[in-house]
View 1 (cartoon, rainbow, N blue to C red):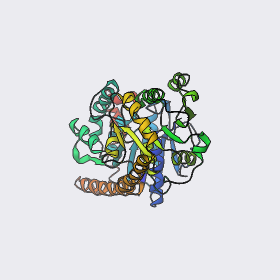
View 2 (view 1 turned 90 degrees about the horizontal axis):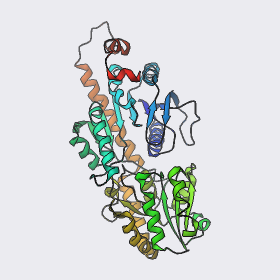
View 3 (view 1 turned 30 degrees about the horizontal axis):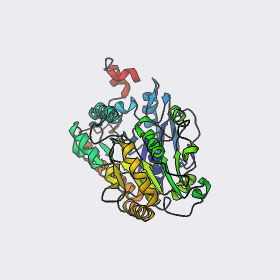
View 4 (view 1 turned 30 degrees about the vertical axis):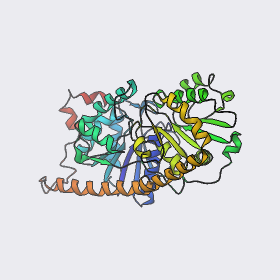
Length: 415
């Protein structure tokens, strides 16, 4: 099977990790992958497979969204037409860009089945401004998602939300994020000795308002955790981090390591950590959380998105998105002092990942979805009568002819 994967490789975020892990695993299963991504002749980051790449031009790209150039649609269409052999499936790991809204029509005209993985974080309830804003994002995307052949999401809660917004249930597939449990596993680490503490607490992720890191920092400072406990922050040092570091530094036992690109170093950090804390206001299904759990770390997370579902039934500690600082102020000293409890939480976390969130299971489900979609697509196409002297591809109107008949279409702005 040949999969044309549309996603991104930089900047580092959960979407990037998802694309790298899934495409690597597809190659391991002897499938062919072509990677189409927003790039400007940039080098591939470490651990990416050596596969055919197509660069799609863009004006701006961040961890959250991408703004393509005016010709990005034409570049994508031409790339999909030129790929050889012809792709069987187009899989878009949605990058939150205007191009996302054009993909269903592009693939329909090229007669290519289209799958999307929809990543945006959410909260099960609109409990604050951040979760309300994310709900608007889901409302904006729902009409376009209804046109995709299949949409992969990470939890039943997310599925219910999309169905309420009008996405047909038979097009939605719940396939949770998966972790390579042979790579992310408990093991020896010198990280704790390097940090100079008996108890290590860790936050790993973006330093962004929706991640609510400041609530964790406030709670840590107010809890007076003592000199033998350290809070390690791993993530990009952007504007928000720069405004926090002067008030929450090493004098409070808080160590800022910045972004760490090396995966093995991140695994070493997780193996040397006692407690992982994720105080987010909104989430999807955090890969950082799953990686920590796979390494046998006791985990604390809010019930935002699907994270509460991951930690349910005592696989971790779940807190509410409201009053995070006050909850953590009480909880952090208990996690510091009760080592037997955190050891047990770590064991249960590892077990939960092995039961529900392995990369091997994820890939098996993705491949099964591809196979079923191809069967459905073939059955649907076979019901369309095509003159004998035309191929199925020739029978589909060209993009240019369609465009000439649709000069007033809102999509022309992007072409």
